[in-house]
Image (cartoon, rainbow, N blue to C red):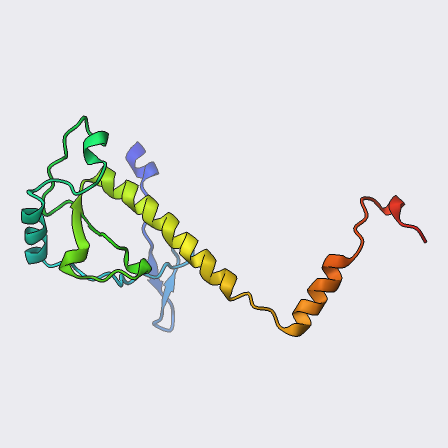
Length: 153
């Protein structure tokens, strides 16, 4: 009984008088995202696992898990050593198998580095035209008053 209350309602469609279907579901339709990520072939996964002796490649895995590196298999997380967003390639030498904890930790580091890179790119794109520079100079050199009562007319 309570399970029915907690489960999300499915979208229902009715056909109109003219034969077109009307969506009477709740909320807007969500488009499915198409993944741009390439599939890692099973042969590559097996080679990576053989190279790593079926153990996690995380640099701090032993510290995180009581001095022992965790065993991994082909269903575990595979990660790019150098992220694609930072110029890495989707090749066998750039892949490693990680336990879920190490993968989360490395992904957090990678996202931080990617955001730093993106921030630098945005800063370099902020070149101002001569007009913008002159307006900025005038604006930055103006006198700043703390309150309206400081104004002298």
